[in-house]
Length: 315
Ligand code: AN0
Ligand code: CP
Image 1 (tube, rainbow, N blue to C red):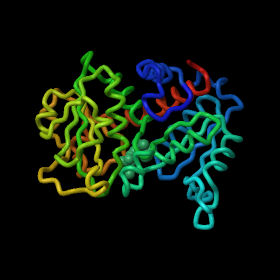
Image 2: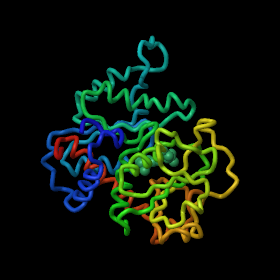
Image 3: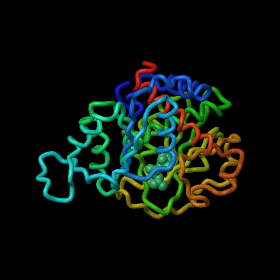
Image 4: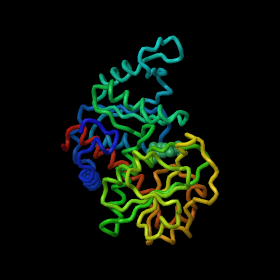
């Protein structure tokens, strides 16, 4: 594996899930792998889970870790040929090149602007790091994908599934702010590669990009989608049209106890952070059906499995 920016960078995602589950049993077994290796994490946006779990994953593998909040660094230029006499102090060519002098792996988080769909979906920042870094790049959530989250989600489903082929529902849920599609896009990509029956449900007008939806069945009725579900994965995203501008939704799409009762004793999942009693009710989040904490716990082993592969531990 040369980089980790989407499921398509992984030859055999199911075996990466198995590696993460194995690491959960023996997290300190491969400490020699990271000896004298350095991982640099670069954050253009805030994080709680991704930052802590990836730092700990690197440490569990014996690596040095350094974290740079880009707000603390020079403002970077991504366009080529620009006369840099404005606000940007350093070009990504030098910045990624210099970071590669100090790091064996570079990990990057960069959210979309949610103003210009084509610009966001070109995934400029992640692709620029991949292009100009001379070391492997890991996505810590790009403008359009969050693969470490989806890997941890698959690990969690693998641990809790009661059927060989569980029914997994990705449902849109309300949120007061305009949010990216990254978590949902990635979840679709990874679940399409997993042994599950995937259903996507959202209000009309909240269609995700067909390049991510592919052949996944879409239901506009949340209740219909929840029937018989083994896992309900809730996430808000802003619409593609008008891009990044939330539109009024007639029905209440919050995940409630009444709706969870329509599932097959299903589990509730969310990547966090979650807005209580907006996205999901307290009654669901505080019930034994909620997997949000084990799911966040699995971020550690997902990150460790990825770093281990990139360090050459397992091909
Ligand atoms: C971000 C998002 O929706 O992409 C990060 C989630 C992991 N969520 C918020 O900004 C609330
Ligand atoms: N789920 C997730 O990626 O959380 P953070 O934004 O806190 O890293």
